[in-house]
Image 1 (cartoon, rainbow, N blue to C red):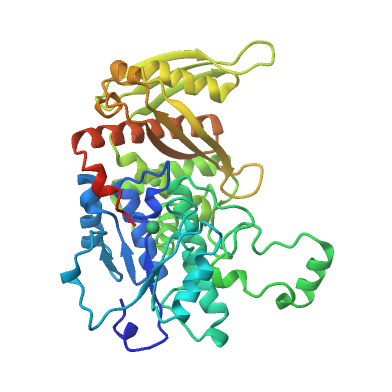
Image 2: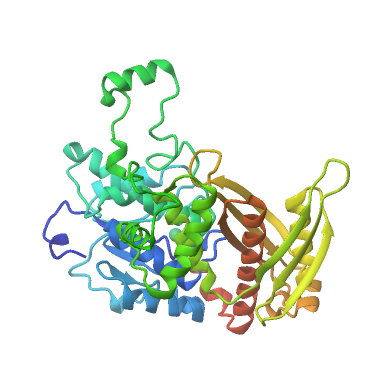
Length: 433
Ligand code: MN
């Protein structure tokens, strides 16, 4: 928190709960490296407080909060704890508002809270969180920024980091941003009708109360191609805030070359997607070694896969499906012996254009007692339903789909095992605000 946050009566403290309340959204499961990456980006964005997790919920949560507190410079890092009246200094208390969007009023209610005397707003990137989600961080920042003359409040946020923060959180959580979402939706600054286009070309403020540049939507000026070298890549990554050297740079460069061979221009958004994709490789989990898929209109699609298990073995499976993606998912179930059910599947393009990178999000659910018997997963044996989310980026969407699916599977199995290892008292967790 900046030192003048308390001195200035109209300075609003941004308390971000993306990693705590946001991470409690169904199907979201971020690992330690992903949480750290989001926390670094929140620091770049200039939030004052990061609620990094609920340390008592699990050893993984505890370690994540501790790791973020050690590494992230700038914001105050806190964790959720149960209320203890003696700990609250009633002489010098900043009133905080924590609103959920059940009636679509989270941002409006947060503003009402500020006008009633609160000076801290609790919010999450892209408005993720329990039920309908929390007040949206980017909407609150831009509300106070755009209407500063009328409202008089201000924050310490660097507005040009908003678009990138939104993309990172969407990519790592697997929660898409609706196209018409205020501030960060892909249509938020698009003008379709002729009369609107004409009006904006003559005078931007006709229909736009905000400038796309203010939220960082034009920050796609970095363009690399297949002739770009290691130094150019390192510089481009550094401009994006990623300091990568040594073996990690070599690996990133190799991935970059593969992409650049298939794609004319590699943009900042592609690099972001690649770096974020690389983060996930650090977890010891199931991984796709190779696959074969036959797709035809004359017979059912058939897939064969080889999967490396967390124990380092290679297992193979084959299956027929309704389509090539369905066939490969069933083949992965057959290889791993885990009868996971697909709950959500989505394909997006990272940028526009025919050669765009495909970005796939998958959510799977475990919960059949039989799953546990076949694959020895203790949490599932307890009859608990567990979901896991996974995302992946590749120029080939079948490859991205298979990778995303095994990552989702790994996350779900990891969650089930963690729950079985250190199950906290459910009555205590039920009191999470
Ligand atoms: Mn909440």
